[in-house]
Length: 132
Image (cartoon, rainbow, N blue to C red; front, side):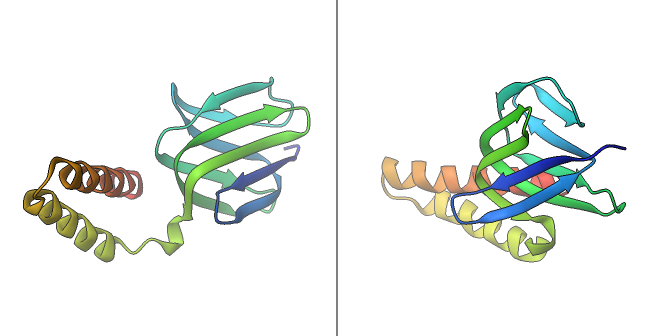
């Protein structure tokens, strides 16, 4: 298969940059696969897993939450709001964080605190669903 350049960037760091054979991304309208010479497209992303297949047969999986995907003649770029390698995610810690966030929602004294706790809980649950 022919290779193309792919980059995945979050506000914190560049998570991936290199030539790949295919990338599967969680677009707002559903999962889509990019191969070399894909038609230009720009779309938003939903929370999910980006699967990167390199020319050496190695597959890397990364979690993204929100952001933009841009495919053009120069390759494919994802600008993610949050991105982590699945290898960095500890499922037991994530489950404990979800439990704590649920307690924070129940213990919130003000609407603002409840809203903030609910947002955090929703983000953690999105991550848990993506890595399950």
